[in-house]
Image (cartoon, rainbow, N blue to C red):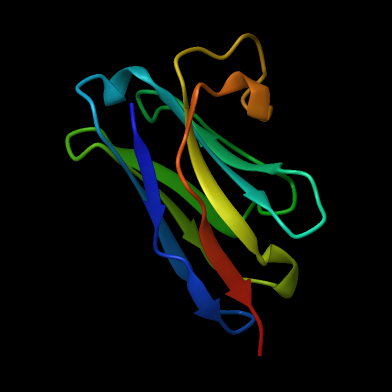
Length: 125
């Protein structure tokens, strides 16, 4: 599966953005999906994840209550709604697909089989 993330941009603190990730291939609905981010000089970190059915979602503590992950399998899309953005949310955001999570490994980059290119989110006044 090929992934492409888009929707990033410059937003003021307290603002909102919605990231989208589109997938090619006929088996998108078989994949669990994750969002990760990477700030300059830092390691890639987990943001949010959603199961193949959309029935379960998981969030990093730093975004819980502010970000919402969702998906539409009919459109082969996954979304990340980001509200109450903070300067520390500034990063390159990636979507990723995993055919399986072994245990509670949705927050590990090594779990994911496919990655999209990043989309830049900058939170600044």
